[in-house]
Image (cartoon, rainbow, N blue to C red):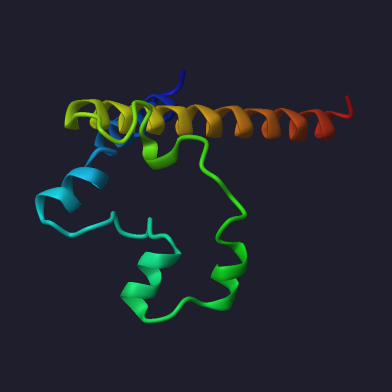
Length: 113
């Protein structure tokens, strides 16, 4: 493993460990939803209307881990934080797998195999 790769993995791990800030800060500052994670109703309350494109595409994607929470709505703060970290690690793993597959396909195409 190169020094760059080592720094990359350390950076990704740090970001995964920092993911709970997305739920901690809004709760600490009573700010409501995490920024940018709004549903159609929240957008309408914030902006006053819902753009047509958002209305059409709002139900297109359902998250595999809704609210980044494995244990349900009535979970403790500790289990929510743990769920956020695990969700971050799953996201990192998914990206690594996808990019590894793409880079292998590109390498095979370049070498004609």
